[in-house]
Image (tube, rainbow, N blue to C red; front, top):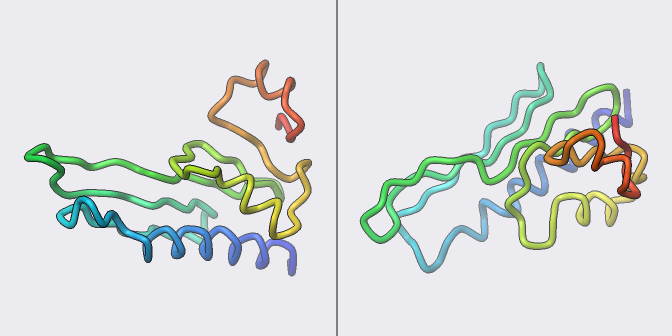
Length: 112
């Protein structure tokens, strides 16, 4: 259970870190973290206006499933996996779910 709590804290820390950076070039874009600890889904939603265009999308979507991080969408420049590795999370606990199962098998990370 301690591992799961650590993993929840890690992803929340990463998302909160990104929220605090914001978008200095686009002050009308806002970010809202969405943490669902009951279902272990974590998102960073972006919404607002950019150059007269309406935006509404997930910059980050990660699920913790079966003791592993399933990264469904990663809009971070350095990548969520990089931050998780810095926290000491083993590659075997990180699934790059934005790749197909066949392509995941070619990475150094978990494929399922």
